[in-house]
Image (cartoon, rainbow over all chains, first blue to last red):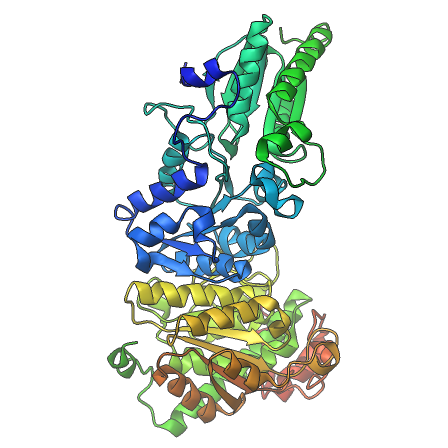
Length: 339
Length: 300
C-alpha cells in the first residue's frame, strides 16, 4: 500500500497549525518554477500583472526574459498561450482562479480543442482567498475546467506536493489546470512523498469511512480523522490531488473496504471533487457519499479559517459528514453487496 | 526580423503582371470552390469567403513562406484564420496550393470530414490552429509571434480578421499587447466588407474611425483595396519591412464579391443553404464554364 504519514506535529496540534516558515502553495509553485527554469528551456510564464500574487515573481527574478507580460487582459493571455505552444514553447498561464474562469472559453478552444501543451496555474482558489470577498473566491473552477475534454485538473495539498506536481505538469504533454493557494499551508508530506498525475494516495489508513479531499481540505480532513479516532471511529484519508482523470480504481477499492465516503473541497459542492467521486463510484461501486464543500452559494469576506467554519468546510464539518456517512452505510448495508 | 530571409523567400520570379494574373486565377478558383463546398454542405458562410479570396490568394500564392511539403518546418510563416467562419475560403486556398485534395475539401461540414465548419488543427495540421470563436485567432497569432521571436526563428505570422470580429474586446487586448511587445513579425489583415451576421457594421456596432483606432493602439496601418492584387502584395511587403511595430492592412472588400446576387447583401453572410440553381448561377458569374461547373457539382 502506498502510504505516506502526515507529519506528527500536525496531528499533535489537533488543528491545522502551521509548521514554522511553511510556504503558501503559490510561493511553493513560484519557487519550484524558478528552480526548474533551466531544466525546461522551453518553459515560458505568462503573467497578467499579478506576478507577486501568483508566486511567479520568483521566476521573473531568475528568468526575466521568459516572463511574458500581458497586462490585465486574461482572455488574450490565455489564447496567446495556445500560440506559444503551437510554436514549440511550454507556456504556463498564471493568474487568479476567478480570472481563469473569465478566460475559460479561450482555454477550451485555443488550448484544449487544439490540444496544446499549455498549462494554467490558478492561485487564489476558493474561500482560501479570504478578505477580498465573494467576488474573488472562485468556487466553480474545478467543475468548469473538469468539463472540458482533454483537460487534466490538479489541486495539490501542501508545498511538497506542489513542487512535485509542478514538475509533473511540465513533464506531461497536454493541457493542465492546476490550483495553488493563497494562505500559508501546513507541510503534510515528507521528501519521500510521490506524486503522480491521475493517482490518489491513502495518507492515513482507516476502516469505517474514507475521506477524499484535495487542496487545502486535505489538512482539515486529517484533523477530522484525528478527532474521529478519539471517539473510536477509524477514518481513512485519501489525498485526491488529481481531480481529472480521477483515480476510479482507488475510489472503488476504498468504497469496498470502508463502505462510506466523504468528499471535502474548498469549492462548490456541485461538479468539483465531489461530483467526480460520485460519478466514478456510481459507475462502479455505489456507496453512501457525503459532500463537504460550499453549499451552492458565493463566498464572503473574512479570514480563511473563519470562512471555512462559516461556510461549513472546516474539520468539524468533515467529521460530522463522516459520522453521517457511516450511519447511512449501516442502513445501506442491509440492501447492498458491499460490506 | 531577418531581412535576408524575406528576400530569398519570394514564391514566384514571374513578372509582376504575370504574378497578378496567376493570383487572380487563384482567387477565382477559391471563390468557385468555396461556393461549391457550401452548396455540397447545405450550409456555410459564402459572403465572407468571397470577400476574402483575393487576400488569401496573395498570402498563400506570393507572400508567405509556406509549402505543402514543409508544413512542420519551424521557420515557415504562420497563418491564423481568426475569422474562422471563412473556412471554405481557407480550404479552397489549401486545395489550390496543394495543402489538401480539392475533391476532399468539398466534403465541408460533413460527418467524418476533416473539413469542419470552422478550421481544426487536429484534423488539418496546415491550418495551424483551431478557430471559430471570434477574437481568439488574433491572440493565438500574438502568442506565435512572441514565441517565434523568443526562439529567434525568423518567420512571420499573419492573421485574418473579420470586421464584425473587431467588436470582440479580446481583439483590442491582443492589439494592445502586440504593440507593447513590438511584434513587427505580425501582420493582421482585416476583411473589411462592412457587413456582419445580422446587418451592416454601422447598424450593429459602429467600427469607424477604424484606422485611427489601430493607429492609437500603436500599429502601422494601411487602408487598401482588398480586391486589388498588386496593391495587396505591395502592402504585405511594406508590412514585412516595418520595424518595431505590428502592421494591419484594413482591406476594403465587397461581401459576396464576384457573385452579383450576393454582393453587399447581409443575408449571404450567415450560414445559408444554396440551391443547385443558385450555385450554378454563382459559378457562372465567377467565370466557370459548363465543364468546370460539372466538376464542382457532380463530384460527390
